[in-house]
Length: 444
Ligand code: SDX
Image (tube, rainbow, N blue to C red; front, side, top):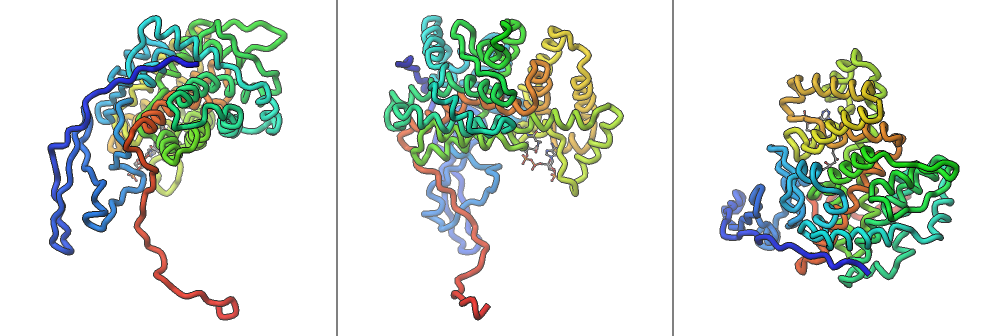
């Protein structure tokens, strides 16, 4: 039913190093292995820490914790580097296309011509959803946020395709990969059409992945819709840039949900829910809302001041990143794309782009942002592109979810194929009440 994807094997972690820990309370010392990967920081293997010391590590937000070993994506936050299976993101954005990048992320190698066409054919043959799915949509209010619809609709795929939900079967895992990849744009377009009261548009497999998605969003029965090649190319490039990003919040959510053996549709639905947050994928919608609120360049200082005021919980949306302490390489490509697409669409003087670039200029000269290494991230420019393409802000994070679908699937598959994988079950430091006896209500 689906192409057998190859799997690349790079070097395993080197385990010859170690660290020694001294417990100053007991004077005892403990030695733990240090693992060295093919690139990036070394890690202290603390899997035996609790058994040997009776202590846990404490790292809320996982700022210093490697949750898994992975061969898929590498990020060097200080250097502003992002690589998919070793290939730099700017080269892939320039020379590759999204279907080829999906094959690379899922299988580990760039496809040969015949492998690529077989893969594209496979994905195309699953682009429709079960005809009953349309009745699932009709249960939503028309003004439902499209992300609420996507969380539900993707999770509901496990009800329509139980034959792809047995995570122990490699064949069913591959079927689920292709089905999720193929149906994500169809469901996203249905969520959009439903929100604007227009009829659903069926996919057309003679179109490329991005062009097919744009047509499903913008075609109407009464008028033909021809996708501009430059807009389709820009959409395809945006999908490439957002495809995967190591162990971000939504990917970690998919992995944790998957570690219990839950089916891939339900796991990805949990990932979509996590992506929705304004600190994560929801930031692209928040950036557009912020730029609209700023309105004009003379109001930028007021917002910069608010962002620097630690007593206000206002943040400059689209700025800062847990990993990138340099310019997000994706933001650089997107800023370029903004100029190209707006030019192509005759929207060269889009005031929001002008405003965004002025906001970036002022922020990057401000000590507060420089000291904290806060640079524009992937969400800062993407919304301007989406708006130029005709999408409402409520669809921005849905577009992010369509692109990230392949990353979630690749990371979930890598975990499921790891014979050592176990259910994720973090511990805690308890600071609540010590044991106390029940007090009957009369005595309270
Ligand atoms: C994505 O993880 C990924 O890879 C995510 C992602 C992906 O592809 O999956 O890259 C996609 O989610 C991009 C990020 C989109 N989010 C936003 O643009 C929202 C705005 N940014 C922030 O909320 C924040 O920068 C985070 C959430 C992105 C990162 O938060 P961290 O790493 O926990 O950093 P922090 O909150 O500890 O901030 C460090 C300091 C603080 O100041 P101090 O307490 O040290 O004085 O920087 C300040 C923060 O107040 N700060 C900001 C800021 N971001 C951080 N101040 C103003 N505006 C901001 N945007």
